[in-house]
Image 1: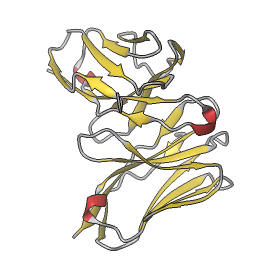
Image 2: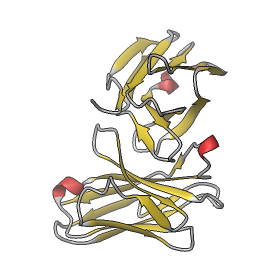
Image 3: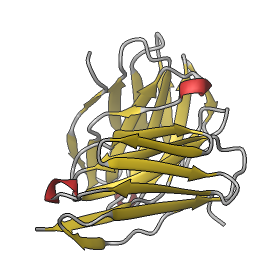
Image 4: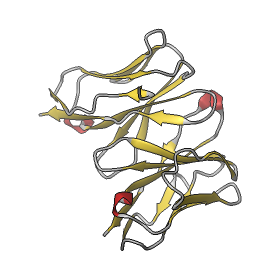
Length: 110
Length: 115
């Protein structure tokens, strides 16, 4: 079993819809959870950072972490065509080694 | 600089040649990471530096790959005798290295094509 699993998509949704992106993981030592957005031919950029379980909201983005289920989610409200990108989850424990999911390709249809 | 800087941004090389990829991290960041991303694939961890030492080299795919970091700043990833399967984008990232706030910031990548 891979340490981090993420559905590669592509996921296509109409503009204005709520988008739900998810990752599962197997390493119970992970306690830092991140979401990155990557546009084509660009480096990943940090979107959200969460420590341990709980929710975090930033504008149209909400990150959720459920450590008991080893499951994390990113929700995007009022999705826009400019949100079309690849979204990568990432996580780490106390050893500074950060493990990424393969990324989900998201298309927002105008 | 303001962000992580990588060079070259694009490199086309012949199979069997050596290449060097350079990363200049965010000023003051002690941790530096190299990842590889092949077309349509996720980020593959290669190596991590804390200061000038590399506590985790587990991701280097073969002995043709090596990396060093000097002065706690610039890092160089070297690929010897390049093969076509080495074609990918090589991403560098840096962070403060504090496990209590461990987020990393990426450069734009070095896009390597081996022909």
